[in-house]
Image (cartoon, rainbow, N blue to C red; front, side, top):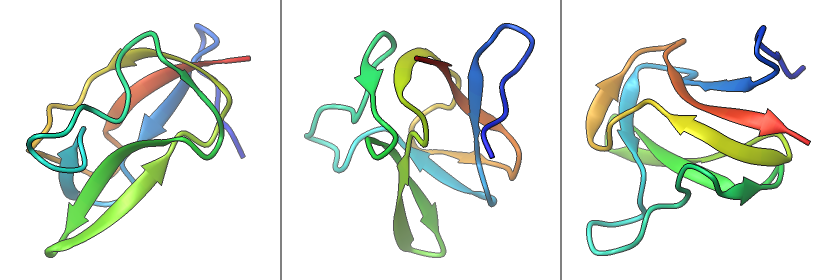
Length: 87
């Protein structure tokens, strides 16, 4: 189920405590930038949990409005990583 906030945006939240990464490796470009169009299956970030990496998909078709999480930093379960405006 997709949750939409009062502004009509879909918050993408951390599902577990983990380290957030915006890019696949240090020399690569970020998966997404603010303003990018995404589909449900577009990979938007990586989450590192105990040295295991998990790709995270947008889960909704739309536009990335705001990215809150900082790459390489710890995020806690429930933290909003980014907001997506659904189409």
